[in-house]
Image (tube, one colour):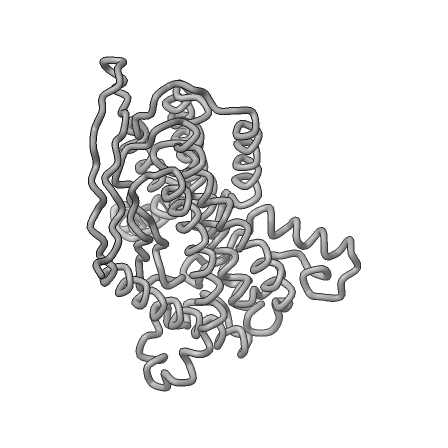
Length: 368
């Protein structure tokens, strides 16, 4: 018996220039299950390796991202892969659970709204977190602003719902910064070459305030989040919250851009511009990485799926848009990586100081 394939769909596509509706027929995309499976397995491996390094440094109370550690511990893991890969299981399972929930939130709404979309593409990467995230591709037009809103907001909500319990468990398992880890953190706060320091979003601090108010004896209640050594599960929650905040940036073709366009198409362009300006300011004062995201919004801000301007969103969806804003406020960290040279301004100041220092020896003989 042959596999059941989805039928072709007929779409009424809105042309914003001609202000008219055209009818198109879209055939279902060909599924490349082998590619999705291969990327997912590769991402499991890379996150297991990075999770194993995080768990090992946590167990031995070493600096999380100190300069002395190997940021790409592939050889270290493979030397005893049967035992060391298991160390990375909590981090890998929690992080991939958050990312999968996010992408399936998009995908399920695509299926419900009869919009063709691919399964999630996971991106393995030899990075500090083992992955560059995941994404799906929309393969057909979107029929209405309500469908666009549901598809756009479904991913962040699903990922956030999974990330919150992961965050709670991870923070309860975290411990105070002491010994070598505390020394590494103190050194990284003053020396940009000594390592990295994490900046925590508001939801981490909210968890600290809540645990303290409840009288918990866990470290998260006794110490501020900056004074904690995060367990690898808490690190998975940190990455999940960071990914959620990036997707909710209100502009371009990010999830936040889809939500803004669905709420009010006329607001999409000015809000995207305002987001770019805000990210440029954050890159100057807080974290240089926001400059890259400002560029991404600049080149994707003008493009957006064309959906009919009517009917507008109902009241429930407009209220839900405020929940998306709340998620952005809770998960966004202005400086996700802290340190003495984390912003564009810091880098320029450092460069000027080094330039002056290098010029001084050449000027001394002429003065004599």
